[in-house]
Image 1 (spheres, one colour):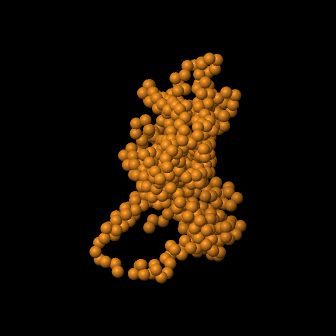
Image 2 (cartoon, one colour; image 1 turned 120 degrees about the horizontal axis):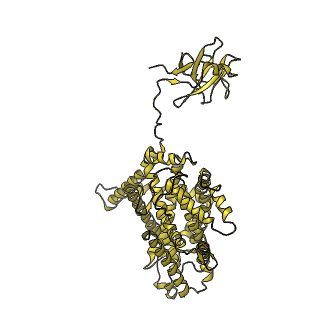
Image 3 (cartoon, chains in turn brown, yellow; image 1 turned 45 degrees about the vertical axis):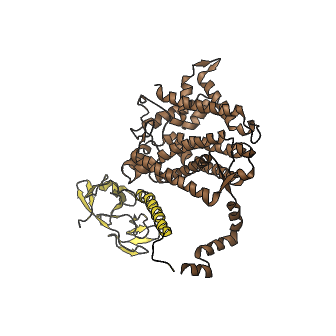
Length: 374
Length: 150
């Protein structure tokens, strides 16, 4: 019976599509999208890393909005409101736990995404701007992590923020001014919460959304990068799958798996596990001594550890300043790599691969050392 | 047309549809429970001791003061006869806060010109119901307000 009516008159969805199409010319968009393909090869799994990062960002937006319903910034209310969320509000512990787990996994996914893009030369022409917007998104993600960490106003958050903003104070000439602007005064106080809160829930989401939109539009416009050795292949040897619906459905399946992983982690380890943990603990007390082990988040550990290992003076400048200079230069090179690597499509470039592995090895070694060495 | 015999497609559709529904349920159930605010920790009051005295009310230009009774706002005022009376201060029309108008001898809501008499009965304007009264007791200088026991 259903097939009979389908032949005679359009269904509701046909008519809805027709209504919108008449006004916005959907047909052209659908035709454009249906031509999109994704290369199929041995490293196709890398193509899911960006999608996973995107999904985790969506999880952050949803759980962040939910936390906003009960969170109250301020030295007298921030800690109390988070305690209220995890102890009084139904499923409040779950929402906070998912927000924290998803935040950490998002940073991890973004790093994996970046390194897979780097090592497959996917940053090369014509994708220079996709790389730049990606670096911008990484920077914003790290700022999200740094600013969000203070918001519960507990002991860990307080001292981590004091050390973190203190590093900005080591910058020559403007350091002191930057520190005062970041903290909203000389010290980390309730004024700092106000600034970090505004940054975390308004400024960063706004900037992130704009950059993310650009990043995604570039990808849709240019298509997915092909592996290096495909340049030598004849067209007939290249395997593709359609973006709609084949790749999209696989993407959604991966998202579903990631969501399940988060749910399991959040339920089994609501306060995190090992070195990735966020117990609420006791309220921040500016007059109390810091706890014995004071560590940054794991994704800042390599920088923290490297700065700690530097001698007090290198040549004629302060060790810490020297470290910050080296990081700045490294970061600039890393950001500008699509413009510095002049290798043509299909060519490998030994120097940039070596640089990539050096950076990766440095990050991994320093992170491990940071946790192993007391 | 549709055969009664179960098909592979039908089976898959049930599994997929059921799985989708279960997933959405698992996502939205905690979210909806989370959005509903937990009941406040404030215990039910049997009686409230006011933090001010009759003299404080007399000193007010409008001969009235507000107080919090649990989560409810109340108004206590001095009538022309020198009697202390207390009412719920939330207008029954659209939740504005009412005020005492000793010049008119009424309880007045400024938002939409709602009028109540001194016992809280709605007498003109939009308010649909009277204001609920409090029982006022005085012990020397101390004033207690309470609600009538049901």
